[in-house]
Length: 130
Image 1 (cartoon, one colour):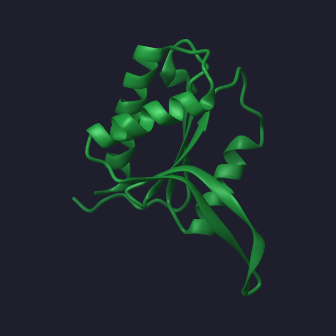
Image 2 (cartoon, rainbow, N blue to C red):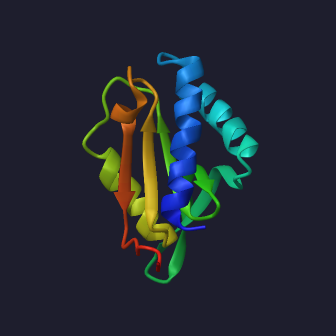
């Protein structure tokens, strides 16, 4: 399954979570609900996955943690805050580069309409062959 198809399914699941729960809850609540929706949709995912940081041929002793990685292809960074900071998108791009993944989604549930809280971050994503 291509990253674009996976992201469509993730966004559909997130819309369902937001439709039922609405804004104003903790990020951890949305994460748990989204994981349930992903499971219902038959998507494989890892939650709070620890990822080592490579640096000049070594792995640093400090890892970073991904909120979700779906189908081992799409990183999902969940938020539940009024406003995203300027560093959120570049940070997700760094995660994509370090994991050699091509697509990430930032999903901020603290919005009135969820489409206003979804952002795609791309790292050398190739379109599928037709």
